[in-house]
Image (cartoon, rainbow, N blue to C red):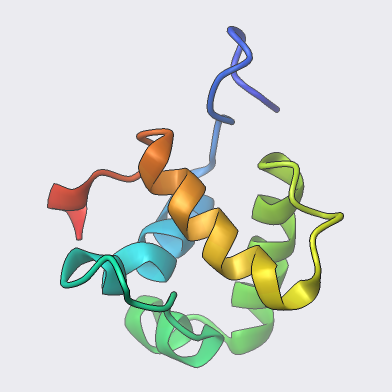
Length: 91
């Protein structure tokens, strides 16, 4: 599902919403940590299991499956910002 030019992946509206919610803490500080599954679930009115499923898909779309579990969320959030998938003004 990567973009036709090999750039940022094409996301569904639900995946994009989860990604923006994950990155939201970076709106106030570059030293922030990504939102937790519970915080994302509460913001988007989803179950934690639904958030986990979306995040697993996002890790795959961004090619982060091989990273250690404790690094995936932070790398995903930073890549989303660096690649322009999520802009600072959305946060």
